[in-house]
Length: 583
Image 1 (tube, rainbow, N blue to C red):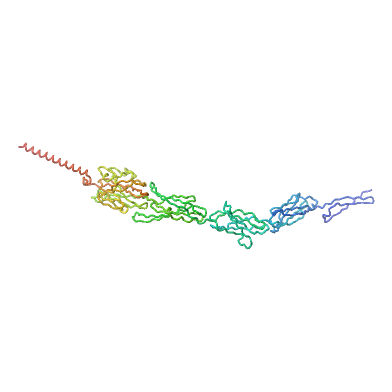
Image 2: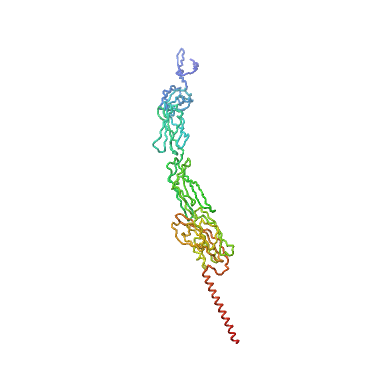
């Protein structure tokens, strides 16, 4: 029997899932019949079935699924997408490679109250299966945290806050806002509830009034709905502007003198204000003064002073150099960010009078010879009035220094206070030298020129009475010549005499000014030495004012007369002897 092969073909067009199966092929003749089996698998993308979609909470949803049809190939992954219908957003991938062994998935960070669509597709080697979609509306929640809070304006007693409403209300309308304002570390808080109803035009703004100026505050807020209140916003540190500060308390001023340095100073103290109304940045010290004094011209004048000084916030005691012989008043204000506050009032404790001190310096005075020959034993001194700004001058004392032959200014002490001042009589003894007081002129009787050696002098007394007696002597109280304060000055007797000067003698001197200091002490200041001037020659060898010279002249005259008598007697005896011999 010969074998004959026949080829037969079955074509399945438009293959569909129903074409899956085992196909049986029969062949037969008159002798027998045979058959063959052929499996046909239709390969296609898989299909899934979303069995459930539910909300775990207001922000989390859970999807569960099963594979409806694998497509005759194992599932390699799942592709999950989400769409927010509340914002009309497009589909977004949640996860495009969910493992094939997973049958559920949790989606987080959803918006409460929003409607979402979820779709899932299975993927195998053939391709992506069809999307399986389900929608869900998330349950509402408390409002979200308010993230945009601003301070719009501030004054010394008000704060204006504004905020932006959350973009999503979490599924329930915001009904009110809770606001809190408090100081750092304060347990009691200023709580305010503000309605968020549409008719409230200021629902996104609030003004705090009646606050403390210059105070630090903390502000926070939260939104609330029917479900509850959301989280508090971030704390906002704010502060009110500084207000007009109160005046410092217990302002005092004391005036002192330092006679060694010939200067005056004041010490000002105060306490902080009761109400600074802000942060104290410092203090402004306003010093006002006025002085009434006699100028160099002899005319009385008034000087007014106004000196502002600024110190830091920690300074409550201020030492300042001030002018002497001046009535001072101090007023202080507290400085904060608003500027200088109220000035302190004027009291007896905030005023003082600076003590008098000696003049800052004395001018050089000119000593010169007299032009007339008959006044060759006199010298002329030109005086200059000194300003009494530092203190009232009680007396101008003219100290005359008689120099020994060959002595110069370099031989004298530089500090005139070291000179031993005696009297005119002691200085003008034979071969004597030294210093004595020739004139004492009060400020009221000041003269611009005095004649030294004219036997006429001025004196300083309590009532500044001028004396013109020829041999006047003045007895008055005086202190040591040092410019130091002494509450109880020593008492000594001073002799003032402007007697005739010695002939052919160099004279110098200086002017000493007396000022009454604090506690009744007497202060003195000396001018530079005068340039030495020599007196003229005396034509009479006998000085009328020297008793010793008079005695010496009388003795010399008597000796001369006796000598002449002896000579005459001798001559007469000689002549008588010659006549006797001739006879």
